[in-house]
Image (cartoon, rainbow over all chains, first blue to last red; front, side, top):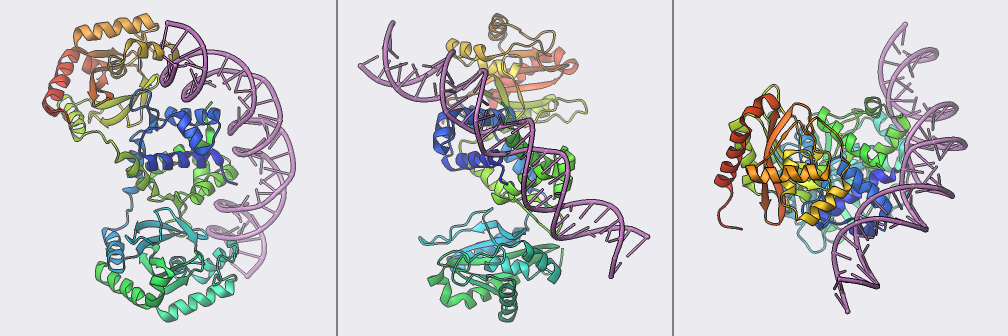
Length: 246
Length: 246
DNA sequence: CAAATAAATTCACGTATATGTACATTTTCC
DNA sequence: GGAAAATGTACATATACGTGAATTTATTTG
């Protein structure tokens, strides 16, 4: 069950992150199609808790710097090592595509760092973006780091859906694809989940954290050179990863 | 009406900001005394939206960097000018007390930047902390920047409560205190709202934003030297505020 | 390797809560 | 400066949702 008012808090914050200026109750209510009275309650709650204020008279609400202060506290612990951002920055620059660091979240894989392609036609992804762990290159690069039991446990919770023509729709299909990935030395996906999207990924274990790197873009650009891209990822990791274990 | 599940989202984030490590469903449920099933729904919602993930196997949830990314987007717009942080840093260093920048939020005043005293006994305040606008030095320094009509409008919404012996409990009492503040050249408060707490504040208009600076600490330390502290605030603002209007 | 214990999910029900409606206040426009 | 429009606030009610109990899954212990 999805908790609506919890989701609404996030919606409101995303709204402010987009418009980047104060908004009145009426504007927010209209934007989301929420009743005024409900919007009133929500804004009151967020204000009460010290997360919204009124920067200037009659110009509406805006988040206080408290969000930033809290997010900093949360993120200063175990941040990704410096070189992983360098890694995806380099990969994006060299390939012209979107590159990301990905982590597991149950049956999904979450993007925890992203450098976007500059191309007009590109893979649009943001930090926090989620994709099925079994139907994507990045996700399968995570699964490769699991034990058989752990994978089985994940499989049990997956709802196999036919996202595209090549989506693996059974445990066996996924396991086969994993074996193929090991054989070829990298994970790939051709519109297994998102239409027209192709990607190459490899596992990226850091300490006891199981991460992966992925480069993804439109099928017609990535398709012909997946192997090259995969090789580039491997080389770049090799180059940037500190030799001596921390 | 306070929206419980909206508040709970904030509680969870504050929880993570405190403990700074992943937490399982059970831990979170126990910490807050929430039913497991409710906690389950909340965590599922936050995960679904890309704000929680599972950094390592079976170690529970932790916020994704999405919080930080969003907070940065929100805060990069119209940040406080650099010198205001310098201002409170200097004030805190020189006085040994807690210094803050404060902004209005309806009948409340919100702390939007804080440098805490290092003393063992100190005024503990954080960004986002809220106090009644009429019963605090910092709040009254905001009210001084309002027109009479705007103040009246605020007064109508205030619930006058006797927080302490010297709390102004009527519109007339507040207006009198404002006139006194103008006469003496700064705002002050002696336990008007918080027990044992005293503070000195002055208005700090920046562009069309109405802010104030306040230095606050225990009554016995601040009391004897309010005037000096106020003078210091004024001098420091004078020193740091850029001469030419931006 | 069972059996026991703990944790995570699911689900139907009754209540806390989102909202429609009404009222108040503020702003706009002529 | 007065009327109309827009915005903000209060409240009762019906209903979406949080929760207790039951079920399944994972983990520890003997």
